[in-house]
Image 1 (cartoon, helix red, strand yellow):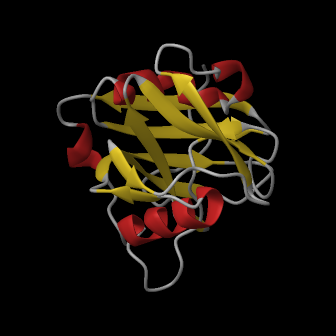
Image 2 (spheres, helix red, strand yellow; image 1 turned 45 degrees about the vertical axis):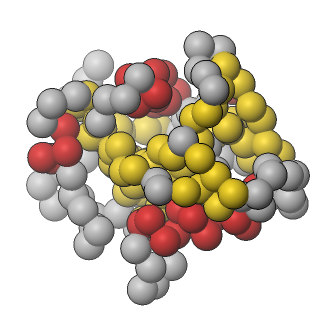
Image 3 (cartoon, one colour; image 1 turned 60 degrees about the vertical axis):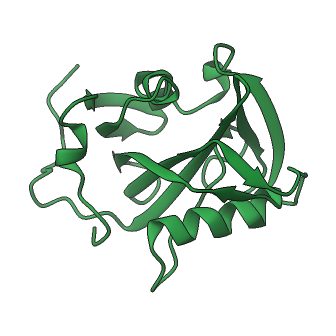
Length: 173
C-alpha cells in the first residue's frame, strides 16, 4: 500500500459517530443499512453523535432508533478514523454489549441481521471491517486509521490488542 495521503497529526473529522455490536450466544447482531452513509451495506447499528452527547449515549440512542433495542452495559472496544474522498471524514467509537433490552425489529433505517461470529458477511461490509472486527469479536481492543479512495482502502494503520487504547483520540475529536 502507498503512504497515507492524510496528515494524521492535524486530521480533524467532520463527523463523530458510533457503532455497536451486540454479541450473544455465539452470534452478532448486525444490520442491513437502508439509509444514509453505508446504505446497502451490512454493519453494526450506530450513527452520528449529536451535540452534547457522549459516544456511549449516542450508540444507545442509535440502537433504539435503528433496531428498537437498548444495549446494556456497552464496553468501548476501539476507534476508527476514516479519511474519505467521497464523503466527510469520520471518527467512530466502536462498542460491544452482551445483553440488550427489547427485541430487534426492522425500521425505516435498518433491518436486523443475526449471524454467527464465524459467519460475518464481510463481502457485504465496508472493506476495513475484515481488519479489526474479527479481533474485536474475540475480545481485543483496537485503534485503526484508514485512507479510502471511494470504497477502496489505499492506506491503513491497524493496531489491535495491548496498547491500542493508548492511541485513542477520545471524545473531543
